[in-house]
Length: 417
Length: 215
Image (cartoon, rainbow over all chains, first blue to last red; front, side):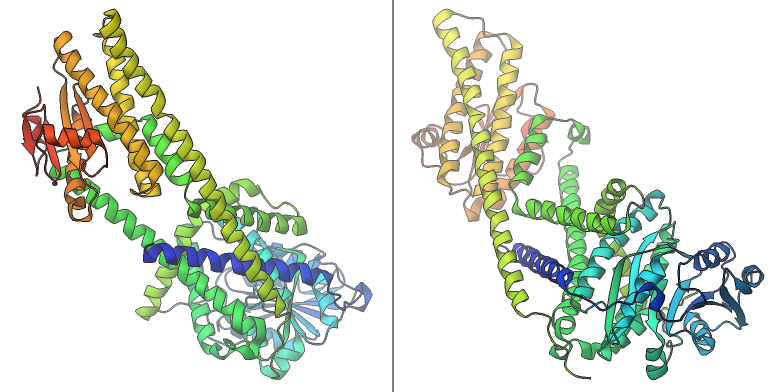
């Protein structure tokens, strides 16, 4: 057996082990009784919406926040304009005052970045629960109350929802649609062993106590939400997940926009994982010894296999073409279809265990996505999104990581906006 | 911060057991599918040998007209297809697998039968179908040379498939018929190409070197 074959089978085995572990954890977590607030017991909450040039979406975002179902008089909305140059501020100002029994405040400041803007909101927030909401995010009306009930347990410092792209259309958004759906399962799985390490800043709930004790958002951190999540885990608190809380985000529609977003996310992941590298230890239980190492191993393997397949594929094509050129081959005959080609596909691939493992993993992905839709309902055609995802995501994922590494190696600056 | 407790250490053991069972289950399932595929591919050899024998017998016993072009062409294409499948079987199960060796021996017989049939057609039907005998070797020392010659021959065949039949014979196959052929054509242990039972090549750089001897 060649080294690469051993490596492939080892990766498959690690993948099966991780999936088995997560599925078992989720089954066991289902039986666990968690203390929860009743609706009328929910504590006071403040929604912070940081915006920078969001004139296209801010109106709908504020309206969505106003429509959230929450005990009367216990919810406030704070919109922080981070030096927008468009009409964002004037649009937000129209909501100022008390609307639907919810107090709406709008503050304006010079551009400091998202972390700085959220810190400004934290200073005036009166809620025991802080919800950060991106200016291009829309939440289902029961989402907040479903999330906030988990704060009855004092150790819980953060609760995450289920995020999906808003009305996914086109290839780029469809890929993200499937990715977000699979993420819903993974987030639940991580939460079942208290190992959630990525809370989406687009809509997550935090206990104000944590900010008071350990400080606000880290200004200048390109993924301030990730830093905060790592910090919560670092100090030994709990992060819960509420898969039933559905929140929509306006996902990038263009390849370049998506690349920029991912480059920022992945750079932030590298930066913050390094900052909190002490968490990779037995002291952090399942998170430190299993979840985080497995997450990084998966990233490494994905990038490695993408490179391997790419280099092998290109080198095979180059050697085949140069051989054919060297002997004056007529390329037209390659286009002729024959039954041997079909037979070869059947025989070569159907008898290869790697293909069967691949099909098994596809089956598991369908199961993950089904789990997500069972929690949040239908949010777009699942089969189309999954099909596009399976074809393109491995290439995209590897590419985003390579670009991130290249950018970081050459010290190119990555910013929030 | 106090050390964080593991949710359940036994869960790792269970996950390991489930992963191991799943892993070997899939390996076993694919081995079983490989076996089914082998049986299916192997069974495809029978109809072609039947067709060749039928044609030859009909000609020798009942003077049947064998100059009908379609029949010969169909058989030749099937023969090529069989050769490719043998190659796939070798890749999949290894060159030393007894099932593959048996299928190769059978295929060698069918090829020689076809080779003889081609000569009859050339004589009886006034045709000039070219034949190439390719004695290849799977021995490590000859593998690169064999593969190189094989690649060139497959290109020659693709360009001249209207009037060319290629017979691939394993020099190291433990078979009487191979021994006899080696003796008849004075073949040593090195890979060798014989075009129309006359021109011999142990090395080729360009397809034109062979094409110039094709009629």
